[in-house]
Image 1 (tube, rainbow, N blue to C red):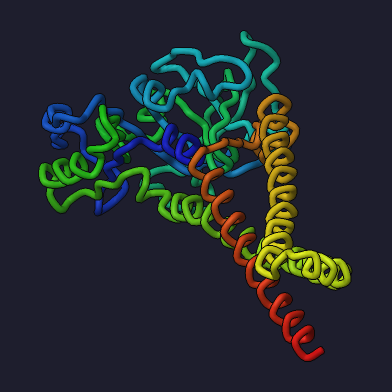
Image 2 (cartoon, rainbow, N blue to C red; image 1 turned 180 degrees about the vertical axis):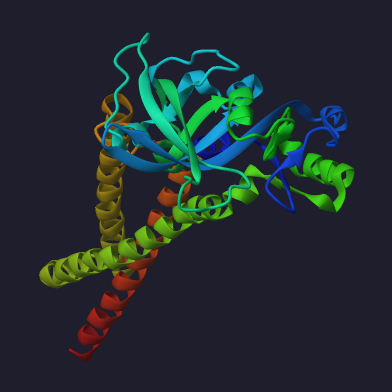
Amino acid sequence: MVERLYSEFDAPIIIYPKKGKTIDLSTFPLEKIKKVNNVEFLSKAIEEIVIVKHEKKWVNAKIYGVDDNFYKMANIKQHIVDGERVKSPKKSIGLIGAGLLDKLQGYIHSDSSFESLILYIPKRNAKLHSMSSPFKTDNILVSGRINYNKEVNDEAILLPFNYVQQLLDLENYSNSIFLSIKEKKYLNNTKEEIQQILGNKFYVTTYLEKNKLIFQTSKSEKLIVFYILLFVFILALFNLISSLTMLFIEKKQNMKWLNVMGLSYVNIKKVFFFQGIFISLKGIIFGFVLGFGLVFAQKMGSFIVLPNSNYQAFPVLLKTVDIAIIFGFVIIFSILASFLTVNFLSKSFNNKMNEK
């Protein structure tokens, strides 16, 4: 889920200039990059931080000037929650993050309606003095709300590339180049090949490197939670130990009679050992039924939602490997706890009987 949220908006490979903020498209080797084997298509992009005004609300935002290839790359149709995309290469009609529109108290009324916003854009090479403003303004329309991840939802406005070029006076320039690839398993090889073509003048990064902390956290989180649950289970084993101890004390007299009737102490130990296993199995069965029930209820009813996600259901997934690992650990620890407890108690009982 984390990869889907952060990989669909962020292109698999992104190219930035090492010096300055812009890439001169007249000298950039676009055709060579397109001919790299694993490159599917290329998208030019311009990013700029702006101030957005709607009625009495003022909010900082980031506009993205993107072309049609970006919308294919970002799977935009699956992420529009209200309204629709209007194809207008030179017009100021775009899409806005769901959280950003909420901050501005704007609203997309229907598929055919627009919300009007005012952009305040820093002037390039502007000289500040008391009689001039460092910003130029322009009116834009947004025709739909998009929902990706919190960062995009709270700050992004997608606008046509040609329009943003003119707005920012960046004719024949862009800030970055987005690349879509055919096979992700060759991601690093493709990155290295592109870096060799571009040399040291550009940064070539992957979506994994751009969101490195998020992906590392998501991968380690599962392991951390597993260790926490394992620690909790070890603490819970003391309930099993105490149950067997109380049962052993309670049945001391019965054990004497069973021994008199011919049952050996080895077999008596087996009775208590299997009693401990039976107690554990009851817990395992109840735990798995409860766990499976919660997972299926979430899949069917989506009663737990992700915060700041426009009511997107918290994702759940059952994996056979996870079930086998948990079941194996529970059984192993239950067997060890039962065996060690019964062995210790039986030795104590035998010593007392021998003293008598």
